[in-house]
Image (cartoon, rainbow, N blue to C red; front, side, top):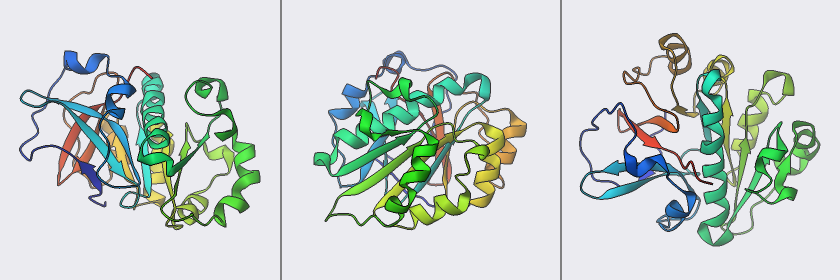
Length: 240
């Protein structure tokens, strides 16, 4: 797995916590947008709370993480929507508008007040646009982020299609899905950076493979990602 997360935080051991800090319970995307990334092609995943420094943003570099795959238990899958929205909204508003964002979703109505409606696609529309996306050439430093929410096998968006899109240096993917399908995708796309919400031990083992399991239980809105050989836990924006 690539160590491609760009994080503005002090080094040190991560201390497991069982409850979300009060400072993160109502984390808004506006707070994240006040802190600009150091280089083009980044977007926010959320933030962690540091007792000394307060809110510390967690961001992802599209160049170093061309495919990000996020999953959580299906009975808590609604928590994946704020995570996907946090990535999409911050990508579209940061970076002096150099990041073009497309959202592929089975529920366009969930995104109507988050992303411009012309950038929201049903899976069938994504297939129709696919030839243009595969041939897309970025203009200068412009970059494209495709957010695919709640991807299902029956959509026909195969791992081969995802890998071919991510092979374009101007395109990166942020994908969410339920654990059973995440296991299949993670096996087929071993270069994907994995973000997990609360998972059963069985699902975590299938999704993560040889990666050490996260031992702590995550709350709603909390996620974890491997960074520098350890788990980094963070909260995504819940006010969008």
